[in-house]
Image (tube, rainbow over all chains, first blue to last red; front, side, top):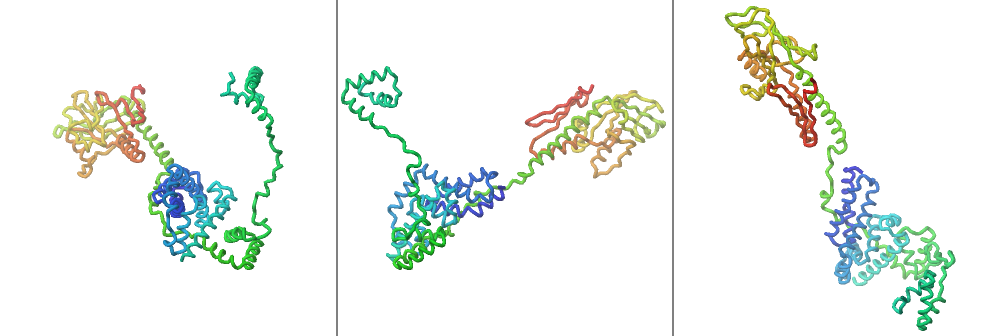
Amino acid sequence: MTTSEYNLCIDQHADKIYRFILKSTNDEELSKDIMQDTFEKLWVKVNLVDFEKAKSYLFTTAYHSMIDMFRKEKRKREYENNNFGTESHHDQYVDLNEQLHAAIKLLPEIQRTVILLRDYEGYSYSEITEITNLSESQVKVYIYRGRVFLKKYIGSIEAVI
Amino acid sequence: MITRENYEIFLIDYIDGKLDTVKAAELLVFLSENPDIEDDFNNLERINITPAEPGCFNTSFLKKDLNDVKEITSKNYEEFIIAKFENDLNPDDIKRIDEFISNNPKYEQDVISFKKVFLSPDSTIQYKDKHKLKKSIPVFRVYSKYIYLAASVAAAVLLLFTVLKPFEHQSAPIQATIFSDTEPDSENKQEKVQTKITIPDNPDHFTEIQSIKKDIPKVPTLQEKDITLTRQIISEREEIPQFLAIKTELIPVNSADNNEIISMLTQPKTIGQKPIIENRNNPLSKINTFLNDKNILTIEKVDFWSAINLGLKGFNNLTEAGVELKKETDNNGMVTAYALESENFSVRSTSKSKF
């Protein structure tokens, strides 16, 4: 990949990667750190990564950087303790997409990741398998569980409204 | 020594057959002295687990594929609905789940709900610091090796011209003969002088001067005079302005009979050079005028030193190498050595090797 193609990757994928990370972490600063880390890693391997495969490389790197950051900073547990258990959501979101994005925060990390990759970027099961190092069966199971949770969440909101 | 605190280690090794005969005998003595442990040992010895034969445990029933599910029920219909929206069902299974829903209208709401739980990207979220991630495209990134190659060639050529060429002409002793074919003019004390300068190492290379007026009080007609040439860099002469001295090199000539200093500027491979007409806008013309005023013979010169320094300046601008060309002179002004120097290397060529 040339420097021009690298810069083109930023134009084409930076928003998507950032969206994926931000929705996964719900932490703006952490997301920016991961963005820097992800694209620095791509730049280091700019001569080895084909432009056509850059998007997959970026999502894979971002995902693993995110996991590493979670582990290093233990933010995942803190975040779950501080937010997931206490958030009151039933009367905050009216728009369905907003409701879903609120609900996605409540999903376990891995379910959230696979659903975001599936819905945001339309990745196939096999592509999600490559990014997350999960088996295809695991990906299907996590997507299924995530969908069921979201469906129940939406149903509960609709019942309240 | 086997004690109640460490006997387990010896027991396990005994069961595994790893205990030597001495220790085994010691263990048996220990067990006979401790009947409660002996009972445990006897029970432990009877437990012998053997690995199952490969393939005896059928795992296939654990695997699950919706296509293999024979019947859609109230317990698995959600999987089919989700799989349908995920485009993960074959046409037959799509038909099956549709029939199941139509036969069970109470599940229609679930279909509607599942249809809603597919996210769409939040386009309002954008990464605003893209410019910080971008890398500048280096101008010479692709072509840098060619530039350095060209610069290297240029440097090599400069080196050859600088170190070798000047010594070819200057390192050898110069002999000059001045011929005079006219009577001295008693009034203006001028005569036409023909001068021929040859280099012993290269007889074909000479400089000849014709029809140059010279103010000499007493010069025998057609008398061949031996003169000795010494070199002096014009820039080293205080009376010559530095800006004029850049492009010329002055060779003082000592006349044999009256010891008058005759100075001239050399121009290799120039024959019959005409005297330069003064042009106030031409610095070289100014210096010729200045030299003529002091009874100095002048010849226009091709200055390797300036040309090479100009080339080096361009080379340094390209490569930022900081290469300098220096020359050393002896007390008589003769160049004794040239050196091409930078921070990383130094190439020096001396004239002594020529003699």
